[in-house]
Length: 319
Ligand code: CP
Image (cartoon, rainbow, N blue to C red; front, side, top):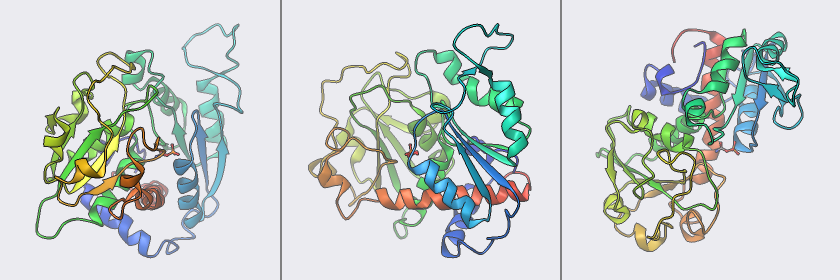
């Protein structure tokens, strides 16, 4: 494997998930694999889970890690080709990516959507430029449109809780939020689940349609209660409008998920990538219920990262 940016970099998701589950049983089996190699983790945006789970995964493989909080601690990056850098930017991304490649054998990059320029975000301008100028494999720690390590951890978590003798019904439900949030987690979850044979329904208010290239064959249902009927897994996530790009479009109905609303499900398991605005996106009673998988998802971030790092260190084509 040479890069990890999306579900399209994976040939067989079931096999990858099973491999991660096997790693989870014996996480130190390949503790010498990364000996003498260095993983660089570059963050243009904040993180708790991605930062620590990827470091832990690297540690399990014997990889050294170095972390650069590029959004706060590094020189301010310039992204325009040919720019006359006489303003606030100090270092061009082409220099930063190449220099980081001198110190690292693999680089992970977090670069959220700016949510102001739709064309730049949808073209993955920052991730693409970084990958272009890096001379080592690059993995996404969440880019403008996708969050593949989160989605792989979500697929692992679902696989560990599949209902017996039944194709699961998975529902991705939009949730309210006070801020403008990128679509990356929702897009990415849709992209990965669309590659399974699960029944998949996305529910959101009108005006919050995700980019069709990721939702593809999912059923879109604007009535949340109807969507939740017989669900086995309910994934809760806010995102800002893709059509009215980056805007928080006012919604009249109450989209906060409660136990009352979940009564129509098949005793559904509850998922959220975290961090979560409790009692804004979803109520405490749901997050803290015995059906909540939120901490299992967070735990599985380590094994999602580990299976990808293993493949990149081994460098053997698609996962
Ligand atoms: N879910 C997730 O990516 O968490 P962090 O933003 O804390 O890394």
